[in-house]
Image (cartoon, rainbow, N blue to C red; front, side, top):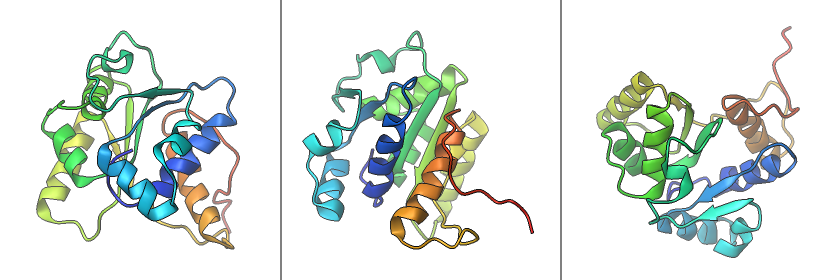
Length: 179
């Protein structure tokens, strides 16, 4: 979780992962991510940490998830700031989030970057192109309305279900059935 707006996406992702007994979640939160958690949801670091199986220190670039020998299905950066996007796009593994993302890419595992900024400037677009060429999935959590959501949580959950599909975690949720 980084400092982009959208802390609710991170919380709902962790809550959905808790329903999956075979999935072990690892959480890394940037200092700005904690600020957004507090500002947007009135939650503290401990509230978020309770939702994860394992919590890593943002500065600990020697953590298990920073090694290619640590087996994962993939990684989701949710929400993903433009700073984090740029760091990954340029190989700047200067904290555990960007180091773990670098490892996921070098091991050809799935990296989903839930970017939260709009509108995009040219640097954002070029960085999105760069990470896509490296194998990442850029996933702005755009709302879908075909399932007639009744509240914000339903909109967020729809995006989270789709995000998790990209790392091989299948959770029931609304999907397009055709007309």
